[in-house]
Image (cartoon, rainbow over all chains, first blue to last red; front, side):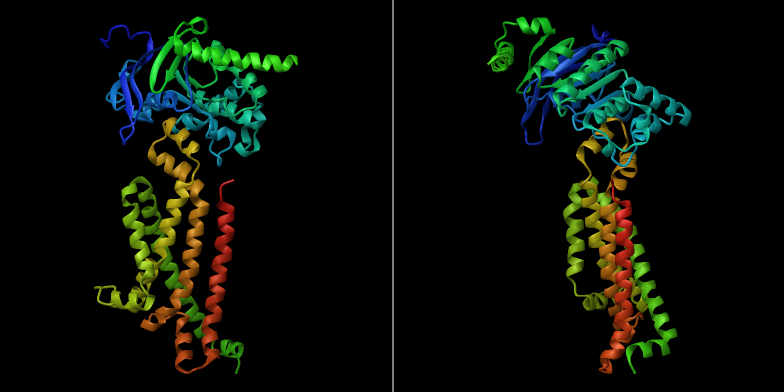
Length: 261
Length: 210
C-alpha cells in the first residue's frame, strides 16, 4: 500500500461517478475519505444519490468511473466481492429478514456461510441478541411475529454477527415510530461507543444526522456539497447547508408555536 | 349393464389402464419438472432468454395435442414406441406452467430480502437455494399442480396413438357409441385429476412461505 495519506481511511472514494445504463448520472466525481471508527452520515433528499453511494461501497453497484478503496484495496480490482461483503455489515430500512428463517438463523447468516462451528454460532447469537437489547427467548421466533423495532434490532444483530469492521446503514430507523426510533438511536450511540466500527449511515433526517454523525456529508443531486462535523454544519455559511439548516429550524419553530398555542 | 358393474367385472383391465395412465403422467411430469424448473431459474439469471424460452413454451401449448403426436412421429427413437411419443408430448405441454411459475415465484421474492442476502455476501448459489427457491416453492408447486391436472386429462388422448392409459376405454366407447364405456375411462381419469389437485394443493399450502 503505497497510497499516501490513506492509512487512516477505512473507505476512500476517488473520483467516483455512477451512471445508469441510460446515461443519467446519479453520482458525479465523488472524492471522500471515511475514517476508521467514525460515523459518517450521508445526508440528503430522496434521490440525491446517498443510497447509491452506500451501495458502491459493498459493490452492489459498480462505479462507472473512478475507484473505491476499502481497507486500501480497490473494490473493483483487488477485492473478491463476496469476501468484501462479508466484512461489511449491511442494514437497510426494509430490514430484509428472511421470513422463512427464525431470528436465530437470521442472525447466524454470515457465521453460517462462513462455516463457523455450531457451538460458536449459538454463543455468538445469544451474545448479539443481548447486545441489541433483545430477550434470548425471541431466538426461536419468526420475523412475522416481531414488532418493527424488534425486527430492526435483529437486522442490526445480523449485520454485526461476524464482527465486521465496517457497517453500512441505509435509513435503518426510517420506518419506525418516533419513540422507537429515538430509543434505537440512543442504543446505536452507546453501541458505537463500545464497538468503534466504521459506520456509514444514510438518512434524510437532519436531526438524526446531527445526533449520530461524527461527520456529515451533505449530498445534493449526485454531488458532495459539504462535509462537516455537526457543529460546523450548524454554523456553516455555505448556502446549501444554510438552506438545509433553515428548513430544519423553521420546522422546529412551527412545532414550537403549535405547542404553545 | 351399468358403469359400476362393468368396472367391477373388468377391474383388472381398469386397474391396468389406470396404472398405465399414472405411468404416462408420472414420467412426463418428472421430466417436465427436471427441465422446466431449471429453465425457469435460468431465465431469472439471464433475462435476455426470458422471451424466447417463455415464447417457445407458449407456442408448444398452442399446438393441438393430436397434431403434436403427429409431428413427433418421425422423430427417431421417440417415434418407435407409442408410450415414448406420448411421454414426450405430455412433457412438452407441462413445461409452460412450470417455467412460468418458477420464474414468477423467484421474481416475486421480496427485493429487500434478496438485497440483504446479497449485501451480506451470499453467493448466487446460496441465495438461490437458501432464499429464493424456498420462498418461491409455493408458487412453483402451484405450477406443478396445474401442469399435473392438465396432463391427466391430456393423457387420455395418448390412446389415440396406441400408448394406452384410460383413454383406451374412451376411444373404444366412442367407436361403439357407448356412453357407459366412455365413462369407464372418464370417471377414473377425473378421479385421478382431482386426487392430484387436492394432494398438490395441500402440499402447496404446507410449503408456502409464512
